[in-house]
Amino acid sequence: MRAVVFEQFGEPAGVREVPDPEPAEHGVVVRVEATGLCRSDWHGWMGHDSDITLPHVPGHELAGVVEAVGARVTGWRPGDRVTVPFVCACGSCPSCAAGDQQVCEHQTQPGFHHWGSFAQYVALDHADVNLVAVPDGMTYATAAGLGCRFATAFRAVVQQGRVAAGEWVAVHGCGGVGLSAVMIAAASGARVVAVDVSPQALDLARKFGAAECVDAARTPQTAQAVREVTGGGAHLSLDALGSPVTCAASVNGLRRRGRHVQVGLLPSPDGTTPVPMARAIALELELLGSHGMAAHTYPAMLELVRAGVLRPDLLVTSTITLDETPSALAAMGTAPGGGVTVIEPWS
Ligand SMILES: [Zn+2]
Ligand SMILES: [Zn+2]
Image 1: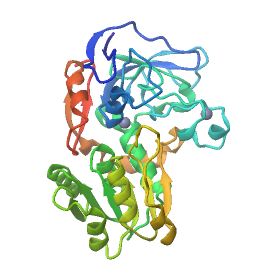
Image 2: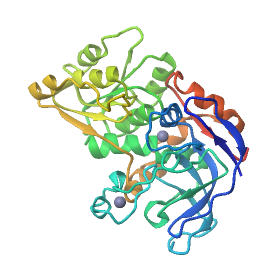
Image 3: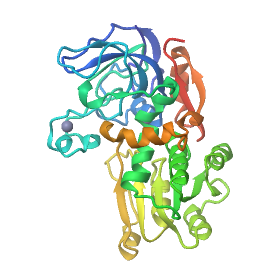
């Protein structure tokens, strides 16, 4: 099969022939029809993720068709249209037993722990735990984003963030996950203030339901701007980018007893990030993390998509080929927020 491979962190990736994957006993091989390009892939390529061993094939937001099935898989067969959460769970650890597959103790993330979906085929573990059927009528390009940016945003806003109608929700960073969060919060009846440095990203945020926008390129004091437009601060705020600046701005833009949800990854040399904890104490803030979403909680989200309340299809703004992927991956570090790029490995 053809795949995007990198041999060294931060060095240009290439497209080459590699052996086709084989399914594990509990796993499947999926023919990849579409796979999203995500900032996490860029972090992995840059060497920010210690789970990656070289050489490596990135890619973790995928949809496609089951091609081959391991001997112990009971729920899936060749030809099924499927997607997966980017956190593939083991199905048997205490976290999985509690229904929290998104923080599985033996999780495998395609494109991080093993070769991912920037390829014509990808192997996925524990298929009976992790595969989700792609609804009829949903394109592979739309379904690809469900496994990472859209489900991550859904869990951050709805499950972890506990959004309520009428609340103010601030979204810092309007890339794929941020725009998804804007759409989900607005559809939940919240009033959304979107923050980004890119006017193009803010235009999309407005299109997806943001009531207010803060242009961080012109207004460096974004937390103050959020407090002003929300009449005292957001009830719920997300750092959807992942940087010390946006994390602090999210916390500082909250009102009393507000909830911050960290969604964007925060790599740093020693694994820590400064957070305004004095404000968290004084205002009794809640500081939460959000990490993907368990496959068994997809139905509530898919029902809102089916009903047309949520429109993940609108987030996809470009499709590219495998050959165009290495340069698009390298550009991800400086890419402005905005729409989502989907790779079609067979095009
Ligand atoms: Zn992703
Ligand atoms: Zn587990």
